[in-house]
Length: 341
Image (tube, rainbow, N blue to C red; front, side, top):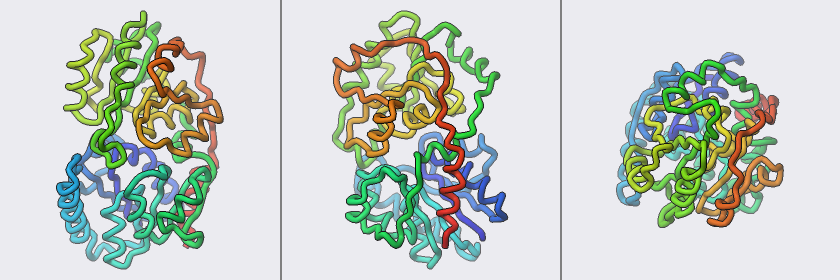
């Protein structure tokens, strides 16, 4: 088959790169598109991809989001015309799913967060919905995902591309450029996505407290990965500590997380990547908690920092070693579900 994969956000790059490798190994042809948002395009090119780029993020304004959505649907519809596409793959990117519906192309949507407002649309547009086993059944029903169209896989989506991960010893040189020393306690912090629909109206005050608390600790080096440049500038202006560094260029996320002693995120993917790699992970997510995160907390691979007291009590130290999940069967399982037509 000729399969179209859309990269709507930076976490999609490693996930779909691993999926595409498995698909190509089975003889399928892949077409790539991407949205110019966060580090998506830069990461895609770093992975050796040359996606056709269409559209940008709509920001916080709902009206602007609607205009940007319609424009991207039109551009993708025009791009996909006469490309003989057999299947569309999306991780909750609405535009390719809409194009697939309009063009009569079969589509598969993958998703792991049950509180995203877009689920009401994406789950209904897709011919097949694939979710992790922890995804609540009542949420699937409310989103219009019938039992006939829904498939589940064991584990987490990060297992798809991190189960066979091996740290790159040469990555230490990149850390030196970020002024990270071997004996530093390295904390990687990913702020929340301020423009996401599920974060509208939220102010993550825990992030500010955590930054100040960690920065005052001896031998701590903080690498901050903002969602966009303006967010990084704003945070650095409020927290001008000498041991806080903004990572401005796209980096090898898996190796960065593997090198960290603690990962703290106001989102989801980076924390779950840390959990998959066996790196201490703490969530300061301000939205409605995901069932997949509750699953990882029960496994002891993630903790929730829900108050300043939780952050104050956190013991900052060097980790002993990686404790990878090694769920190597998940990638094949997910691709089998994608191709089960």
